[in-house]
Amino acid sequence: MAEELRRETLRLLLNQSEEWDVSSLATELVARESDIQPSDVGEEHQKRVVVALLHRDLPKLADADVVEFDFENERVTTGDHIDDLDPLL
Image 1: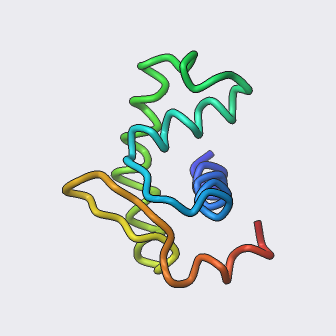
Image 2: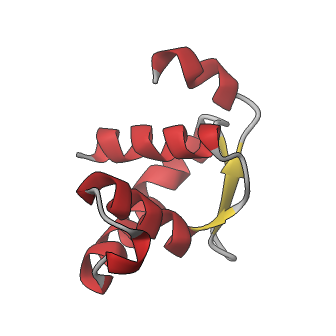
């Protein structure tokens, strides 16, 4: 599950290379996973994904330089090496 969340995060960032706040990123990821509109995402599910992103997935991706992660402001964008992963996703 964690690996798939990281893969989906990377796919989203590759396809929409903009800065995301972690809450919006989590909402979009849950919506895609559940095949629903972002406005239909339940708060509890969204919060679980936010916690996973903040404390597990985004720090790992930042350590690999594939995302830029600002923990204090809860913002994420693509990193220097994200394009290296495109063929693997």
